[in-house]
Image (cartoon, rainbow, N blue to C red; front, top):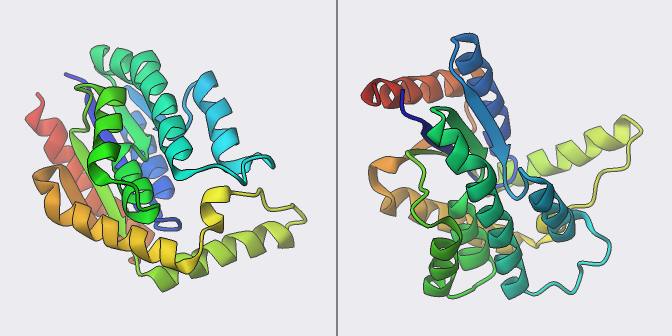
Length: 220
């Protein structure tokens, strides 16, 4: 079977990481070769960039332009070091975020010129594009509640919540991100499968599986 590339998108707290894990487990149980990844990251270089972007105590002065370029530096490495070889080997690549996140977060969220954002993305990924993108949509209020719950859970467990610069943005930023994902869902055609991320986890997983089965059936 030819390799397939599936990405998982949505705002913070939408449930995409859980759904990626569940799909990876199901595919592996059925004997499919699976390559789960995350962005930024997924390679030694990418993980260093991820720390700089999100968790470093020295990143407060980072400009949107720097953010855009660092994200795509990580992405360019991931595409060439991991994604393309995995697809060539017939694996099913599952990625927690890919270039749609950059269009939404840096384009809509940070207010960078969308054409400039797209040009940088195109340079980073070349012709490596997802076959299918799951977009999990949730209301802004639910995203906020889930972020707060996650921080509270870490504190209750006695752990210090890991600082994430991306999650420190204000409500207006995340409102723009939400609008960006709505635009993505309208503009991306059949590649994007929008799913209500506020529903039960099992029901969402069933919908993800139905759409994945269709993709895999078409690739035989």
